[in-house]
Length: 152
Image (cartoon, rainbow, N blue to C red):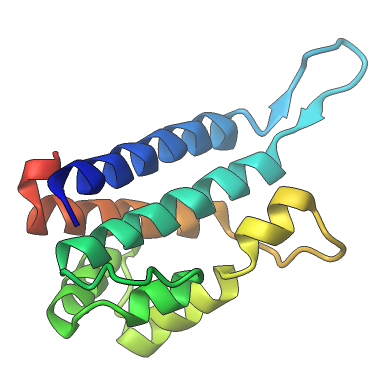
C-alpha cells in the first residue's frame, strides 16, 4: 500500500482514539438538568474502530495489507511474528501483565463483535473493559510508532 494510505489509516485511527478518549472521560453527559446521556456505547464503538484501524496500520506496515480481515483477532493473526512479539511486549508494558500471543488473540476475539454490537446495541452486548481496551490501543499505537516512525 502507498504511504498516503498508511498515513490515512493511522490518522483516522488517531481521530477515533481521540473521540473515544473524550467519550470515555465523559461517560455521562448532563445535556439536560434532569437526565444525562450515556456515552458508553459510542465510547466502546470509537475505541474498537480505533484499535481495528491501528491493527490495520500494523498489517500494512508489515506489507500484509492485502485483503484486510474484518475482525480484530484476524487482523492480529495476519501480523508477522516479529510484529506480534513487539505488540505483546508493548501491551505487557502498558497493562503490567505478562501475555502470550494466545492471550492477546483471546482478548481481541472477545472484542471482535464490539464494533457491530456496540454500534447498534443489538441485544446483549459483551461487557467491555474500557481501560483494557485503551491499553490495547496505546500498545498498538506505540508499536506502530516504533516500527513505522514516519507515521508519527
